[in-house]
Every structure is written in structure tokens, then in C-alpha cells.
Amino acid sequence: MLTLSHDIAANVVNKRQNNSFKGNYGHVLIIGGNENLGGAVIMNAQAAVYSGAGLVTVATDLANKSAIHARLPEVMVMDYRKDLSAAIKKADVILIGSGLGQELTILKETLQAVQAKQTLIIDGSAITMMAEQHLPLPNAKVVLTPHQMEWQRFGEVVIADQSREDANWEALINLNPEPILVLKSSATQVYLKDDMYQLSVGGPYQATGGMGDTLAGMIAGFTAQFSPVSHAVLAAVYTHSAIAEELSKTAYVTLPSKIAEAIPAYMQRLAMETVSKAPVDTKQEE
Ligand SMILES: NC(=O)C1=CN([C@@H]2O[C@H](COP(=O)(O)OP(=O)(O)OC[C@H]3O[C@@H](n4cnc5c(N)ncnc54)[C@H](O)[C@@H]3O)[C@@H](O)[C@H]2O)[C@@H](O)CC1
Ligand SMILES: Nc1ncnc2c1ncn2[C@@H]1O[C@H](COP(=O)(O)OP(=O)(O)O)[C@@H](O)[C@H]1O
Ligand SMILES: [Mg+2]
Image (tube, rainbow, N blue to C red; front, top):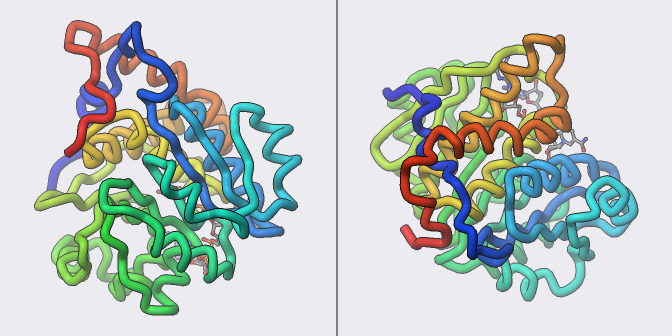
């Protein structure tokens, strides 16, 4: 067991190169938000944009279009029932599941269209539907972000056993390809390759709806910009809860949208800490 520390995030988030443009910072496609759960993709998208993703598109139920445009003019919006496979092809990182509800057709189309070189983050309702339908993981760089109940459904590890590292590894080695697992709880754990990282920051001020949607958006934003994917995921998980911990000094509850607003300033501080190192090599393959 390793501790997910500040140094990991500071090493990942580096100063940007002067001659770069939006194409160097990745195109994130967010797929989710049914008629009633549009807020989930707004929180995904705000976190991805504020983390610095080069381009962000939201594929969603069109009932959410005006709300997304009103809150986030930086984001492009499309109907997730039209030309989804073509949009998936153009993305570097795909995040599916937050607020997706029971939209199984959308999920199946995404799992079909995703390619091996792409990062696919699977969250929320997509994890639940994959468990219910026994859908296999696609051949891609998969990041799973379940909370405890979602992991119980998908990994078939009962919540009481999830504090046991060996129980979670046993479930993970049966998955192909083996994903990065962000197992969210009051003591979030990240499983990658042969190591488990225990998150050392955060607290109960984060126990509010949308907190995981914001984390998923940050993971999308970080993996779009920084490589390898594993380090980007660790940095996003740390930064999300470190910001919450800071805000909790003056806030009883740390609202997801307030965490997102604080991301650029926090990342700038991380980048300044590593200013003596070489600028990050964006878009380098693992
Ligand atoms: N504003 C919005 O549009 C929001 C949309 N959301 C979306 O709603 C969908 C359903 O997600 P939910 O998680 O609410 O529902 P789920 O039914 O998937 O999970 C909630 C159930 O899990 C149990 N549980 C056990 N341990 C838990 C833990 N550590 N964390 C959370 N729940 C735990 C709860 O008691 C409850 O019975 C997801 O797609 C999610 O992204 C939520 O993020 C809430 C906000
Ligand atoms: N008591 C707590 N201490 C630390 N982190 C917490 C606590 N409660 C919730 N969180 C964090 O909040 C997030 C909740 O995710 P999730 O349940 O998926 O939220 P939602 O789906 O509503 O967006 C996770 O990152 C989890 O680790
Ligand atoms: Mg969630």
C-alpha cells in the first residue's frame, strides 16, 4: 500500500509549453446526462474544462443543451442519439456514465466504438448497467470510478470486504483488460498495475451529490493532458480532495461546482512547484 501524496500531483502538473495550442491538451467527449440528470454532465464538463482539457464535447439528451450552454460556453453539445460513434472516433478521452440512467443503447454503442489507443473512463450509471447486463470491458485504456455500491455490483466484492486490498485485487485480475480502479469512499483507494494507493486527503464535507461526477470530469481533463494515464489519474484524485480539504476550512460542505472553480488556481500552484523541471510531454503514448 502506498500513500497518494502531494508530490505525485506536483510531478504530473507542469508548466505549459509556450508554443502549444488547444490540440496539445486533448479532446474530451463526455457521454451522459439523461432527461433528468443533466446536472451530472454539467459537473463532469465544468471539471474537465477547468482542469485544462483542450476541447470538451458533451453528448447528452438534448433537453440539457440550453443549460449546458448557459453554464459552460466553452463546451460543445451534441445529441447522444445521433452520430455518437463518429464523435467517439475524434476524441482522445471518453467519459461515460454520469447521469446516464438506463440508456443502454448509448452505452453499448460507446463500448463498440471505442479504440485501443483511447482512454475510457466509466462512471456512475454505466458501471451499474455493465454489471446488470454482464457487459465486458472494451479494449481501451479503461479507468473505472465506482463508489462502494457500484463496485459491489460490478466487481462482486461486498462493501464489507472492500477495505481488504486482496479482495479487490482478486476481482481486478479477472477483468480483461485490467482497468485502473478508483474505488471511491471515505477512504478512496486507487489500484493500478501492482500497486494500491490510499488517498490521504479529503473528508465528510465531500459527502454531497455530484462530488463523483466532478472527480470523473477531472480525471478526464487530467488524462487528456498528462501521461502516462496512471499518473494523471493519481494526480486528479489527489487534487480533487486536496481542493475540498482546503475549501473545508471555511465551508461546512464543499460544493462540487466550488471545487471545480478552484481547480485552475490549485493546478497553477502545482505547476509552479515543478517549475525547475522540463515541461510536461503532452500526448506521449504510454
Ligand atoms: N445532479 C445530478 O444529475 C446527479 C446525478 N447523479 C447520477 O445519478 C446516477 C445514480 O447514482 P447514485 O450513486 O446516486 O445511485 P446508485 O443507486 O448507483 O447508488 C446509491 C446507492 O448506493 C449506496 N451506497 C453504499 N455505499 C455508497 C458510497 N460509498 N457512495 C455512494 N452510495 C453508496 C447508497 O446507500 C444507495 O443505496 C449516477 O449516474 C450519477 O452520476 C449523482 O451524481 C447525483 C447528482
Ligand atoms: N466522508 C467522505 N470522506 C471523503 N470523501 C468522501 C466522503 N464521502 C464522499 N466522498 C467522496 O465524494 C465522491 C462521491 O462520489 P459519488 O458517490 O460517485 O458521487 P456522485 O455520483 O453523487 O457524483 C467520491 O470521490 C468520494 O470519495
Ligand atoms: Mg457517482
